[in-house]
Amino acid sequence: MSDKCKLVIVLEPVPKNFAVLYNSIKYSGLKNVIALPFAAGDTIGEAFIVKPKYGTDEMNTVRKVEHVDSVQEEYLVKLVTLDALLDSLSIHRVNIIKIDVEGFEANVLKGLKNKRSKTYRCTSS
Image (cartoon, rainbow, N blue to C red):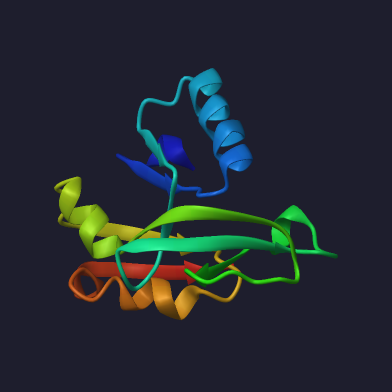
């Protein structure tokens, strides 16, 4: 799909997943894809990405900065709003936003207040 887009921005806050993503983009020679090691949310700051003790990598979830005892792994990550991110990249129009954040979708959309009216389609998996 990236070959049909002018620009693709991908956020992946989990360090080992980001490394795989970054290397895949580099190996594929994609020039229109920007990968950033951030999580999207409703505020700018930090949050934990947590993996439950009995979960898989697909079950990582974002939690506001607080320690959770029942996790196998946790990563302190930078949290950004999509409004702030798009402003920092001087992006004024968004055609599609795909969100896959394991239950944190409402928080991500709250951080998209200013750009939402200019966004044509949002999807969540």
